Image (cartoon, rainbow, N blue to C red):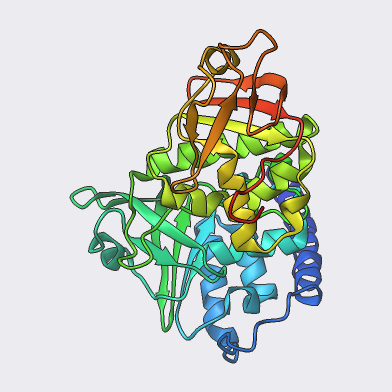
Length: 353
């Protein structure tokens, strides 16, 4: 009797989850973002193939992805071949992501390549794989051939070769390749952070663990700026931080000057990128260290051959400013790697002044 009740409860719970996922799938389809004219057209759905794949996923305990694959297989389609990295149920069952963002997460876990476990093991460690999410890649961060062990974005491929049939491969992974922290979701922000890859060789240009930690640190910095009233600068920094980190892979000591009003955030990308870099020094300076510098000291910025200038400084009783701008909120954040100073207005770019 107890066993029968338990089975009834599990069936009821599974039915509820299936209904919720079906609604989510329909919502994702209705709110799908139109594709660019240059993107590849979606191929006709092979429902028998996806039905077989869904059954294989259920047998392996990946019920959520199995349901989505059966109800809305077009989420996982964008090319003639696909490899799906299915996230285990426990890692996504309580997610509060909106449907459009959950769809992006699924696309980030799907590659337009058909890759078996043997194919993955033959890749060099550090290789980057394309995904269905525009301009986002995942990286093979660990390979142990003898143990047939692979990690992608530092996440273990826990169930390799769940399904290998036709144009489709499916592997199970322990958790998402990108954070599910809802605190990182802000309008207009690039939520899914991918590893830094060399655009020419598709290999990592720096150790992926350090890269991931650095991205996480900058995410915290951006969130802190936003919560402390520097919203416009936080938005501008978030828009260009990926390119800044690609260009400065050894940026491990930083001073950030955060303006209270950053009107340039509405500017074109090249100008915004340049102005944001003008507010970042590749060296950590506390307020006391800045104040002790003599007048006319040059401070190197992330803009090549452009410097900020100390006015006043240790030579003047009245204090100092930088490029004519005062620090009104010194050290609003300080760590071993970062220090942030709030400034009264944005620095002017000498090239555009």
